[in-house]
Length: 247
Image (cartoon, rainbow, N blue to C red):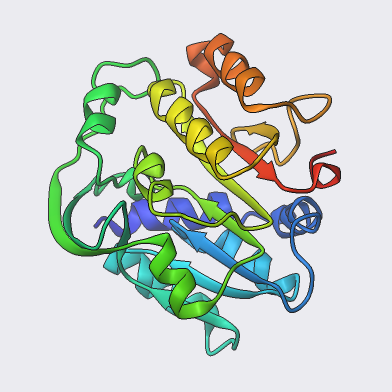
């Protein structure tokens, strides 16, 4: 993986002032002593935020180069467990496709790569390396580490596969969506509604603010995502068993 690409991610996601914005946004989801899963930890901005808020963290990052960065960022900080596997619908092995110029978009989804091909805003992206890695499930993580209060899920088009192996709802959860794969977002919404979630919000890009004036149900959230222009590119859907957390 290109060191310049990792350095760029570190500059973006650990920019001055960003930690305070992250803490202010995620404080609604986590209290001291809670457990959080950061699935797709990348360069650890959310992982460190969750820890600053007093949560214990399981950080999942399968890319070896990024896992090394996470270990350096932690520098012996207690309360964080690093897991270097993929998260999917069933245990086994899968191929992770690497974009060495843009490690943010490494993916185990061939459909994600196909959707990005030729799409506006995705020009020039190349998945030029691959490695076969072990796969575990959210239910297995819960069995090992306990039920989290919050799960952040950002795994580039593989979110629905991960949610297929979640049998109990945590208090709150987020998943990334993209406008090139609105079908994956729709599948995630259906799975989460099936788990009992009735309250949905969204945040576009890295705005760290809610885009809707109030929480809505899964059907309204799907309609909102469908109506987004392609230029919106990506965002995160937030769900909670407690609607006041999404105000």
